[in-house]
Each structure stands twice: as structure tokens, then as C-alpha cells.
Length: 142
Image 1 (tube, helix red, strand yellow):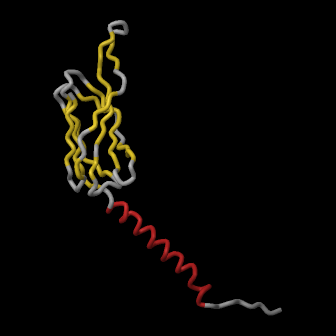
Image 2 (cartoon, rainbow, N blue to C red; image 1 turned 60 degrees about the horizontal axis):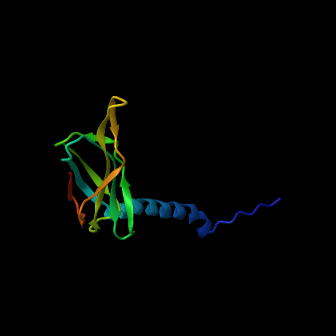
Image 3 (cartoon, rainbow, N blue to C red; image 1 turned 135 degrees about the horizontal axis):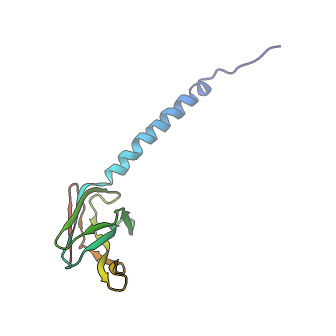
């Protein structure tokens, strides 16, 4: 009984070619995403409300995609005349005009429950500015 095996250049290099193409795609994808990221952006929320606030969400406007993008925040409690700040990378908005939106709640004393409760969600939207590396978005909530 005779068995035939096919030895063509195409069949021998096909898995190698597929691996090379896959590696190239995987390598280039983060570089493209990183190129569109606004890197090392300083975000600061100053509380001048006279009360304690809790920042519950932080979003930024992607002008090209026309949608809000979320930056997760862990319910940061900020006392009056204090600030919360962090450095983040904002994806998809490098060199775009960006608005930053802070969603927060204000502390209020509930005399019936005898404890602090939180108000309904409020929003503050900072004026738009160009997002570049090490941009500074400082917001004062009054």
C-alpha cells in the first residue's frame, strides 16, 4: 500500500505565516490604542460646597465618537475645602477637546434616622479643553 504526502511550500508555511500575522496584529493593536490615549492626565475635584460630597462617577466626552466615556471612581468622599486627585489615561481622546463630567452626592444630616444620608445625584461639567499628555483638568464644585 502506497501513501502519498503532499509537500508544497504553501502547506508547510501556512501555520508559520498565520502565527506571524497574528503576532503582528496583536503587537500593533495596543500601539494604535495607546496613540489615541491622552496619557497621564491630572484630574482634580475641589469641594467648595460647604458640605461633604461623595464623587460617584467621572466621565469624559469623546468628541469624535460623540459619547461619554467612563473613568471608574470608588465613591470618593471629599470633605469641604478638600480635593481628590488622580492621574489617569483617557482612551480615544488624544488631541481632542474634552469635557469632564463629575457625578456626586452631597451629605445631609437626617434627624429622623440620626445619621448622614446622601442627596440625589448631581452633576458638574467642566469647560472643554484640549487633551494632551499631562493635561490638567481641575474642577471646583460650589
